[in-house]
Image: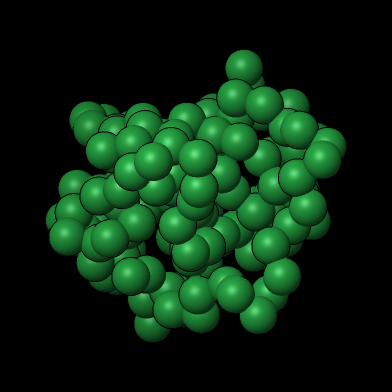
Length: 142
């Protein structure tokens, strides 16, 4: 499955993506954590600010799935680690979208680049309501 152009545009413009990898039991999800997101070639990418030591990144890579909450929707997703030249294009997308942010340099630095994840939709069940904002982690990254 891939993102439709409209879905991807809404996610990028809302800039409110929260990632919630599956827990070890495969039935529950971790605490949603707000993170940056960018689109390159009709694909959605995120990075862990604290690199590979980030808890959400470790869970995403270990469990390979979970959900995202973005643009008013909850979507089941697959997480795929990313390496190679696409990271340069992801850097460019971060520069364009987050120009002027004090977090930009760390997000295009080697630590965060090493923890780049492609977010691929698997299903979009209509019966999954968004998680209330009161339970969403407010840190950029955990």
